[in-house]
Length: 436
Image 1: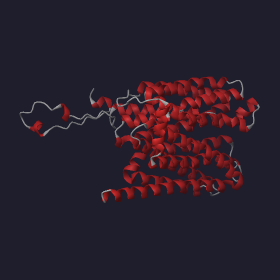
Image 2: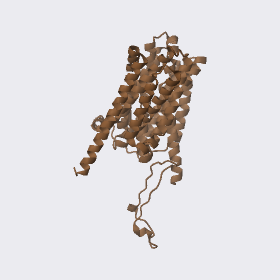
Image 3: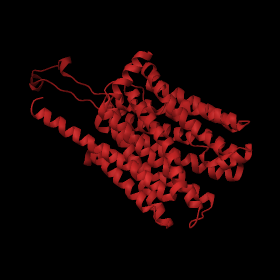
Image 4: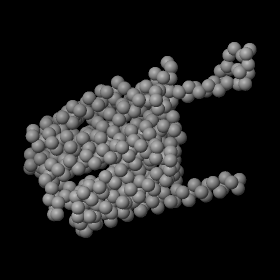
Protein backbone atom coordinates (compact mmCIF):
# COMPACT_ATOMS: atom_id res chain seq x y z
CA UNK A 1 0.00 0.00 0.00
CA UNK A 2 1.48 3.41 -0.83
CA UNK A 3 2.63 5.56 2.03
CA UNK A 4 0.17 8.25 1.10
CA UNK A 5 -2.68 6.00 2.13
CA UNK A 6 -1.16 4.53 5.25
CA UNK A 7 0.57 7.46 6.82
CA UNK A 8 3.89 5.59 6.72
CA UNK A 9 6.93 7.00 5.02
CA UNK A 10 9.45 5.01 3.00
CA UNK A 11 13.16 5.74 2.96
CA UNK A 12 15.38 3.91 0.45
CA UNK A 13 19.15 3.89 0.69
CA UNK A 14 20.89 2.59 -2.44
CA UNK A 15 24.51 1.85 -3.14
CA UNK A 16 26.49 4.12 -5.41
CA UNK A 17 26.25 1.52 -8.15
CA UNK A 18 22.53 2.18 -8.36
CA UNK A 19 23.29 5.64 -9.71
CA UNK A 20 25.00 4.24 -12.82
CA UNK A 21 23.09 3.64 -16.07
CA UNK A 22 23.78 -0.08 -15.91
CA UNK A 23 22.28 -0.60 -12.44
CA UNK A 24 19.03 -2.50 -12.73
CA UNK A 25 18.29 -3.43 -9.11
CA UNK A 26 19.02 -2.40 -5.55
CA UNK A 27 20.31 -5.14 -3.25
CA UNK A 28 17.74 -6.12 -0.63
CA UNK A 29 20.11 -5.37 2.23
CA UNK A 30 20.54 -1.79 0.94
CA UNK A 31 16.84 -1.01 1.27
CA UNK A 32 15.51 0.29 4.56
CA UNK A 33 11.76 0.76 4.82
CA UNK A 34 10.33 2.68 7.76
CA UNK A 35 6.63 1.86 7.98
CA UNK A 36 5.97 3.87 11.13
CA UNK A 37 3.28 6.52 10.91
CA UNK A 38 4.26 10.10 10.23
CA UNK A 39 2.23 13.35 10.13
CA UNK A 40 0.50 14.08 6.85
CA UNK A 41 -0.52 10.52 6.04
CA UNK A 42 -4.02 9.09 6.23
CA UNK A 43 -2.94 6.43 8.71
CA UNK A 44 -1.51 9.03 11.08
CA UNK A 45 -4.68 11.11 10.92
CA UNK A 46 -6.86 8.06 11.56
CA UNK A 47 -4.66 6.98 14.45
CA UNK A 48 -4.68 10.47 16.00
CA UNK A 49 -8.45 10.81 15.79
CA UNK A 50 -9.03 7.27 17.09
CA UNK A 51 -6.87 7.81 20.17
CA UNK A 52 -8.36 11.27 20.68
CA UNK A 53 -11.80 9.62 20.87
CA UNK A 54 -10.43 6.96 23.23
CA UNK A 55 -9.16 9.73 25.50
CA UNK A 56 -12.54 11.48 25.38
CA UNK A 57 -14.39 8.27 26.33
CA UNK A 58 -11.92 7.40 29.11
CA UNK A 59 -12.11 10.67 30.98
CA UNK A 60 -15.80 11.32 30.31
CA UNK A 61 -16.59 7.98 31.96
CA UNK A 62 -13.99 8.31 34.70
CA UNK A 63 -15.30 11.64 36.02
CA UNK A 64 -18.95 11.33 35.00
CA UNK A 65 -20.28 11.40 38.58
CA UNK A 66 -18.08 14.19 39.95
CA UNK A 67 -20.52 17.01 39.15
CA UNK A 68 -23.47 14.93 40.36
CA UNK A 69 -22.45 14.12 43.93
CA UNK A 70 -25.11 16.28 45.67
CA UNK A 71 -27.86 14.67 43.57
CA UNK A 72 -26.51 11.17 44.23
CA UNK A 73 -26.39 11.89 47.98
CA UNK A 74 -29.97 13.12 47.94
CA UNK A 75 -31.26 10.18 45.89
CA UNK A 76 -29.67 7.50 48.08
CA UNK A 77 -29.68 9.38 51.37
CA UNK A 78 -25.90 9.05 51.42
CA UNK A 79 -23.35 11.34 53.01
CA UNK A 80 -21.06 13.46 50.88
CA UNK A 81 -18.08 11.29 51.79
CA UNK A 82 -19.95 8.14 50.69
CA UNK A 83 -21.02 9.72 47.41
CA UNK A 84 -17.46 10.90 46.72
CA UNK A 85 -16.39 7.24 46.51
CA UNK A 86 -18.20 7.03 43.16
CA UNK A 87 -15.25 9.03 41.83
CA UNK A 88 -12.51 7.74 44.12
CA UNK A 89 -13.37 4.09 43.45
CA UNK A 90 -12.97 4.61 39.71
CA UNK A 91 -9.67 6.51 39.85
CA UNK A 92 -8.30 4.22 42.57
CA UNK A 93 -9.12 1.08 40.60
CA UNK A 94 -7.50 2.60 37.52
CA UNK A 95 -4.27 3.25 39.44
CA UNK A 96 -4.36 -0.30 40.85
CA UNK A 97 -4.99 -2.13 37.57
CA UNK A 98 -2.98 -0.10 35.08
CA UNK A 99 0.21 -2.12 35.62
CA UNK A 100 -1.27 -5.65 35.37
CA UNK A 101 -3.31 -4.69 32.31
CA UNK A 102 -0.23 -3.24 30.66
CA UNK A 103 1.35 -6.68 31.08
CA UNK A 104 -1.57 -8.23 29.22
CA UNK A 105 -1.05 -5.75 26.40
CA UNK A 106 2.50 -7.10 26.00
CA UNK A 107 1.00 -10.52 25.32
CA UNK A 108 -2.19 -9.79 23.39
CA UNK A 109 -1.36 -6.47 21.74
CA UNK A 110 -2.11 -2.82 22.42
CA UNK A 111 -5.09 -2.46 20.10
CA UNK A 112 -6.71 -5.66 21.34
CA UNK A 113 -6.45 -4.65 24.99
CA UNK A 114 -7.63 -1.09 24.38
CA UNK A 115 -10.64 -2.40 22.47
CA UNK A 116 -11.53 -4.89 25.22
CA UNK A 117 -11.06 -2.26 27.94
CA UNK A 118 -13.33 0.23 26.23
CA UNK A 119 -15.93 -2.47 25.56
CA UNK A 120 -16.12 -3.41 29.25
CA UNK A 121 -16.08 0.21 30.42
CA UNK A 122 -18.90 1.35 28.14
CA UNK A 123 -20.98 -1.73 28.98
CA UNK A 124 -20.68 -0.92 32.68
CA UNK A 125 -21.43 2.69 31.82
CA UNK A 126 -24.82 1.62 30.47
CA UNK A 127 -25.52 -0.26 33.72
CA UNK A 128 -24.54 2.60 36.07
CA UNK A 129 -27.84 4.51 35.69
CA UNK A 130 -29.71 1.48 37.07
CA UNK A 131 -27.66 1.12 40.27
CA UNK A 132 -30.17 0.34 43.09
CA UNK A 133 -27.98 1.70 45.90
CA UNK A 134 -24.91 3.78 46.51
CA UNK A 135 -22.98 0.60 47.29
CA UNK A 136 -23.83 -0.90 43.93
CA UNK A 137 -22.98 2.39 42.23
CA UNK A 138 -19.55 2.46 43.87
CA UNK A 139 -18.94 -1.18 42.89
CA UNK A 140 -19.88 -0.54 39.27
CA UNK A 141 -17.67 2.53 39.15
CA UNK A 142 -14.75 0.52 40.53
CA UNK A 143 -15.18 -2.07 37.77
CA UNK A 144 -15.39 0.73 35.23
CA UNK A 145 -12.17 2.32 36.51
CA UNK A 146 -10.37 -1.04 36.44
CA UNK A 147 -11.44 -1.56 32.82
CA UNK A 148 -10.34 1.93 31.81
CA UNK A 149 -6.87 1.14 33.20
CA UNK A 150 -6.20 -0.72 29.96
CA UNK A 151 -6.23 2.53 27.95
CA UNK A 152 -3.55 5.00 29.11
CA UNK A 153 -0.44 2.78 29.22
CA UNK A 154 -1.39 0.77 26.14
CA UNK A 155 -2.12 3.91 24.14
CA UNK A 156 1.26 5.50 24.79
CA UNK A 157 3.03 2.18 24.14
CA UNK A 158 1.14 1.83 20.85
CA UNK A 159 2.22 5.32 19.82
CA UNK A 160 5.85 4.70 20.77
CA UNK A 161 5.87 1.61 18.54
CA UNK A 162 3.84 2.84 15.57
CA UNK A 163 4.78 6.53 15.25
CA UNK A 164 8.09 8.02 14.15
CA UNK A 165 10.10 9.42 17.11
CA UNK A 166 9.95 13.03 15.92
CA UNK A 167 6.15 12.90 15.85
CA UNK A 168 5.73 11.02 19.14
CA UNK A 169 5.27 14.00 21.47
CA UNK A 170 2.68 15.55 19.15
CA UNK A 171 0.78 12.26 18.89
CA UNK A 172 0.73 11.73 22.65
CA UNK A 173 -0.25 15.37 23.08
CA UNK A 174 -3.34 14.74 20.96
CA UNK A 175 -4.26 11.75 23.14
CA UNK A 176 -3.83 13.90 26.25
CA UNK A 177 -5.94 16.57 24.55
CA UNK A 178 -8.70 13.98 24.20
CA UNK A 179 -8.38 13.36 27.93
CA UNK A 180 -8.95 17.04 28.64
CA UNK A 181 -12.01 17.19 26.37
CA UNK A 182 -13.43 14.07 27.99
CA UNK A 183 -12.76 15.30 31.51
CA UNK A 184 -14.45 18.59 30.70
CA UNK A 185 -17.47 17.10 28.93
CA UNK A 186 -17.96 14.40 31.55
CA UNK A 187 -18.51 17.14 34.14
CA UNK A 188 -20.30 19.82 32.14
CA UNK A 189 -22.73 17.64 30.17
CA UNK A 190 -23.80 15.67 33.21
CA UNK A 191 -24.32 18.85 35.20
CA UNK A 192 -26.66 20.45 32.71
CA UNK A 193 -28.54 17.23 31.83
CA UNK A 194 -29.00 16.33 35.50
CA UNK A 195 -30.46 19.76 36.18
CA UNK A 196 -33.40 18.87 33.91
CA UNK A 197 -33.73 15.07 34.10
CA UNK A 198 -31.70 13.83 37.06
CA UNK A 199 -28.34 12.15 37.55
CA UNK A 200 -29.36 8.77 36.12
CA UNK A 201 -30.23 10.25 32.74
CA UNK A 202 -27.04 12.30 32.86
CA UNK A 203 -24.71 9.31 33.30
CA UNK A 204 -26.75 7.40 30.70
CA UNK A 205 -26.04 10.18 28.18
CA UNK A 206 -22.30 9.92 28.93
CA UNK A 207 -22.54 6.15 28.48
CA UNK A 208 -24.11 6.50 25.04
CA UNK A 209 -21.51 9.06 23.98
CA UNK A 210 -18.76 6.70 25.15
CA UNK A 211 -20.25 3.84 23.12
CA UNK A 212 -20.04 5.99 19.99
CA UNK A 213 -16.43 6.91 20.77
CA UNK A 214 -15.51 3.26 21.37
CA UNK A 215 -17.00 2.07 18.08
CA UNK A 216 -15.30 4.84 16.10
CA UNK A 217 -12.01 4.10 17.85
CA UNK A 218 -12.05 0.45 16.82
CA UNK A 219 -12.96 1.25 13.22
CA UNK A 220 -10.34 3.97 12.81
CA UNK A 221 -7.24 2.74 14.66
CA UNK A 222 -4.72 1.23 12.21
CA UNK A 223 -3.58 -2.33 12.83
CA UNK A 224 -0.20 -2.42 14.59
CA UNK A 225 2.86 -3.22 12.46
CA UNK A 226 5.67 -3.06 14.99
CA UNK A 227 4.25 -4.83 18.04
CA UNK A 228 6.29 -7.76 19.34
CA UNK A 229 4.58 -10.00 21.88
CA UNK A 230 6.34 -10.26 25.23
CA UNK A 231 6.01 -12.55 28.20
CA UNK A 232 3.11 -11.97 30.63
CA UNK A 233 4.73 -14.14 33.30
CA UNK A 234 4.82 -12.51 36.78
CA UNK A 235 8.59 -12.97 37.06
CA UNK A 236 9.12 -11.18 33.74
CA UNK A 237 6.76 -8.39 34.81
CA UNK A 238 8.59 -7.92 38.12
CA UNK A 239 11.93 -7.85 36.32
CA UNK A 240 10.69 -5.26 33.82
CA UNK A 241 9.22 -3.05 36.55
CA UNK A 242 12.43 -3.32 38.58
CA UNK A 243 14.50 -2.29 35.56
CA UNK A 244 12.29 0.73 34.94
CA UNK A 245 12.44 1.84 38.56
CA UNK A 246 16.23 1.47 38.45
CA UNK A 247 16.38 4.01 35.60
CA UNK A 248 17.05 7.47 37.13
CA UNK A 249 15.45 9.32 34.22
CA UNK A 250 12.24 7.30 34.44
CA UNK A 251 12.09 7.83 38.20
CA UNK A 252 12.36 11.57 37.67
CA UNK A 253 9.62 11.54 35.05
CA UNK A 254 7.30 9.55 37.32
CA UNK A 255 7.84 12.04 40.12
CA UNK A 256 7.23 14.98 37.78
CA UNK A 257 3.92 13.50 36.60
CA UNK A 258 2.80 12.88 40.19
CA UNK A 259 3.72 16.40 41.32
CA UNK A 260 2.02 18.13 38.39
CA UNK A 261 -1.13 16.10 39.08
CA UNK A 262 -0.93 16.97 42.78
CA UNK A 263 -1.26 20.64 41.84
CA UNK A 264 -4.09 19.99 39.41
CA UNK A 265 -6.00 17.68 41.75
CA UNK A 266 -5.73 20.12 44.65
CA UNK A 267 -6.89 23.13 42.63
CA UNK A 268 -9.89 21.50 40.96
CA UNK A 269 -11.02 19.71 44.12
CA UNK A 270 -11.09 22.93 46.13
CA UNK A 271 -12.00 25.63 43.59
CA UNK A 272 -15.73 24.93 43.93
CA UNK A 273 -15.58 25.64 47.65
CA UNK A 274 -13.81 28.92 47.07
CA UNK A 275 -16.28 30.11 44.43
CA UNK A 276 -19.32 29.30 46.56
CA UNK A 277 -17.88 31.34 49.45
CA UNK A 278 -17.74 35.13 49.70
CA UNK A 279 -16.82 37.33 47.93
CA UNK A 280 -17.86 35.29 44.87
CA UNK A 281 -20.94 33.30 46.04
CA UNK A 282 -21.53 31.80 42.59
CA UNK A 283 -24.42 29.42 41.85
CA UNK A 284 -23.60 25.76 41.23
CA UNK A 285 -24.35 25.93 37.51
CA UNK A 286 -21.75 28.60 36.89
CA UNK A 287 -19.21 26.80 39.04
CA UNK A 288 -19.65 23.66 36.90
CA UNK A 289 -19.01 25.72 33.79
CA UNK A 290 -15.47 26.58 34.90
CA UNK A 291 -14.45 23.19 33.51
CA UNK A 292 -14.58 24.84 30.10
CA UNK A 293 -11.08 25.95 31.07
CA UNK A 294 -10.05 22.39 30.16
CA UNK A 295 -10.11 23.55 26.53
CA UNK A 296 -6.92 25.44 27.30
CA UNK A 297 -5.40 22.10 28.28
CA UNK A 298 -6.47 20.65 24.94
CA UNK A 299 -4.47 23.31 23.12
CA UNK A 300 -1.39 23.21 25.35
CA UNK A 301 -1.18 19.40 25.28
CA UNK A 302 -1.59 19.15 21.51
CA UNK A 303 1.16 21.75 20.92
CA UNK A 304 3.64 20.19 23.36
CA UNK A 305 5.60 18.68 20.46
CA UNK A 306 6.32 22.10 18.98
CA UNK A 307 7.28 23.38 22.42
CA UNK A 308 9.83 20.60 22.92
CA UNK A 309 11.16 21.21 19.39
CA UNK A 310 12.00 24.78 20.37
CA UNK A 311 12.99 24.50 24.03
CA UNK A 312 13.90 20.84 24.52
CA UNK A 313 12.29 18.58 27.10
CA UNK A 314 13.77 20.22 30.18
CA UNK A 315 13.17 23.73 28.86
CA UNK A 316 9.53 22.81 28.24
CA UNK A 317 9.18 21.48 31.78
CA UNK A 318 10.64 24.71 33.18
CA UNK A 319 8.13 26.73 31.15
CA UNK A 320 5.24 24.49 32.25
CA UNK A 321 6.29 24.90 35.88
CA UNK A 322 6.62 28.68 35.51
CA UNK A 323 3.18 28.93 33.87
CA UNK A 324 1.60 26.86 36.66
CA UNK A 325 3.31 28.98 39.32
CA UNK A 326 2.07 32.19 37.72
CA UNK A 327 -1.46 30.80 37.66
CA UNK A 328 -1.35 29.87 41.35
CA UNK A 329 -0.13 33.33 42.35
CA UNK A 330 -2.63 35.17 40.14
CA UNK A 331 -5.52 33.12 41.58
CA UNK A 332 -4.86 34.56 45.06
CA UNK A 333 -6.58 37.83 44.09
CA UNK A 334 -10.18 38.32 45.27
CA UNK A 335 -11.29 39.02 41.72
CA UNK A 336 -13.24 36.53 39.61
CA UNK A 337 -11.40 37.62 36.47
CA UNK A 338 -8.02 36.94 38.11
CA UNK A 339 -9.20 33.61 39.53
CA UNK A 340 -10.27 32.51 36.04
CA UNK A 341 -7.00 33.74 34.55
CA UNK A 342 -5.16 31.77 37.22
CA UNK A 343 -7.10 28.62 36.33
CA UNK A 344 -6.26 29.12 32.65
CA UNK A 345 -2.54 29.35 33.40
CA UNK A 346 -2.58 26.42 35.84
CA UNK A 347 -4.44 24.25 33.33
CA UNK A 348 -2.15 25.19 30.44
CA UNK A 349 0.97 24.53 32.49
CA UNK A 350 -0.29 21.23 33.86
CA UNK A 351 -1.35 19.71 30.53
CA UNK A 352 1.83 20.84 28.78
CA UNK A 353 4.00 19.37 31.54
CA UNK A 354 1.99 16.14 31.58
CA UNK A 355 2.25 15.70 27.80
CA UNK A 356 6.02 16.32 27.84
CA UNK A 357 6.68 13.97 30.77
CA UNK A 358 4.46 11.12 29.55
CA UNK A 359 5.90 11.21 26.03
CA UNK A 360 9.43 11.23 27.46
CA UNK A 361 8.62 8.03 29.35
CA UNK A 362 7.65 6.25 26.13
CA UNK A 363 10.72 7.58 24.34
CA UNK A 364 13.09 6.57 27.16
CA UNK A 365 11.84 3.00 27.66
CA UNK A 366 13.23 0.81 24.88
CA UNK A 367 11.64 -2.38 26.21
CA UNK A 368 8.51 -2.94 28.29
CA UNK A 369 7.07 0.38 27.16
CA UNK A 370 3.59 -0.52 28.40
CA UNK A 371 4.95 -1.14 31.90
CA UNK A 372 6.97 2.08 31.79
CA UNK A 373 3.84 4.02 30.84
CA UNK A 374 1.79 2.10 33.42
CA UNK A 375 4.16 3.13 36.20
CA UNK A 376 3.82 6.73 35.05
CA UNK A 377 0.03 6.45 35.09
CA UNK A 378 0.08 4.93 38.59
CA UNK A 379 2.22 7.81 39.84
CA UNK A 380 -0.03 10.27 38.02
CA UNK A 381 -3.22 9.02 39.65
CA UNK A 382 -1.57 8.72 43.04
CA UNK A 383 -0.71 12.40 42.60
CA UNK A 384 -4.35 13.09 41.83
CA UNK A 385 -5.50 11.35 45.00
CA UNK A 386 -2.87 13.07 47.11
CA UNK A 387 -3.67 16.45 45.60
CA UNK A 388 -7.39 16.14 46.25
CA UNK A 389 -6.94 15.06 49.85
CA UNK A 390 -4.08 17.39 50.77
CA UNK A 391 -5.65 20.28 48.88
CA UNK A 392 -8.85 19.99 50.92
CA UNK A 393 -6.88 19.78 54.18
CA UNK A 394 -4.83 22.83 53.19
CA UNK A 395 -7.99 24.76 52.28
CA UNK A 396 -9.72 24.05 55.57
CA UNK A 397 -6.54 24.96 57.45
CA UNK A 398 -5.43 28.06 55.58
CA UNK A 399 -8.09 28.90 52.99
CA UNK A 400 -7.25 29.24 49.32
CA UNK A 401 -3.79 30.52 50.25
CA UNK A 402 -3.12 27.15 51.91
CA UNK A 403 -4.05 25.30 48.72
CA UNK A 404 -1.86 27.64 46.67
CA UNK A 405 1.04 27.02 49.06
CA UNK A 406 0.65 23.27 48.53
CA UNK A 407 0.64 23.79 44.75
CA UNK A 408 3.75 25.97 44.87
CA UNK A 409 5.54 23.33 46.91
CA UNK A 410 4.70 20.68 44.31
CA UNK A 411 5.87 22.91 41.44
CA UNK A 412 9.10 23.55 43.33
CA UNK A 413 9.54 19.78 43.37
CA UNK A 414 9.09 19.64 39.59
CA UNK A 415 11.71 22.36 39.06
CA UNK A 416 14.13 20.74 41.50
CA UNK A 417 13.84 17.35 39.80
CA UNK A 418 14.33 18.94 36.37
CA UNK A 419 17.45 20.75 37.63
CA UNK A 420 18.81 17.41 38.85
CA UNK A 421 18.13 15.97 35.39
CA UNK A 422 20.02 18.81 33.73
CA UNK A 423 22.97 18.27 36.07
CA UNK A 424 22.97 14.52 35.37
CA UNK A 425 22.93 15.16 31.61
CA UNK A 426 25.89 17.55 31.83
CA UNK A 427 27.80 15.03 33.94
CA UNK A 428 27.24 12.31 31.33
CA UNK A 429 28.41 14.63 28.57
CA UNK A 430 31.63 15.42 30.44
CA UNK A 431 32.31 11.73 31.04
CA UNK A 432 31.79 10.97 27.36
CA UNK A 433 34.08 13.86 26.38
CA UNK A 434 36.94 12.48 28.49
CA UNK A 435 36.44 8.96 27.19
CA UNK A 436 34.81 7.29 30.21
